[in-house]
Length: 92
Image (cartoon, rainbow, N blue to C red; front, top):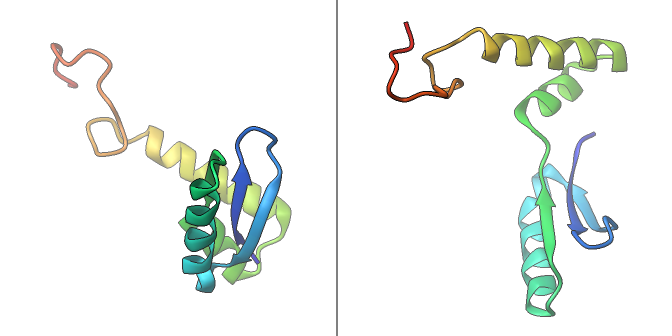
């Protein structure tokens, strides 16, 4: 099951983990670590990771699904998923 993680950016060490359902705990922990002066990051599973897990996909199926998501977003020029590299040129 995908988990929420709080990591120390300087060491890369995971300082805290919890389930997605307990995500508020991760943010509270992160806040307390920032108050202590640590540079931290909260990592939450993506929608694709959560969906893959809930469907019970194998690691190979998860990799194929993730690849299909990337391909799908790359094929949608002019949408919210695509940034025009030259704003002075029209997309089409």
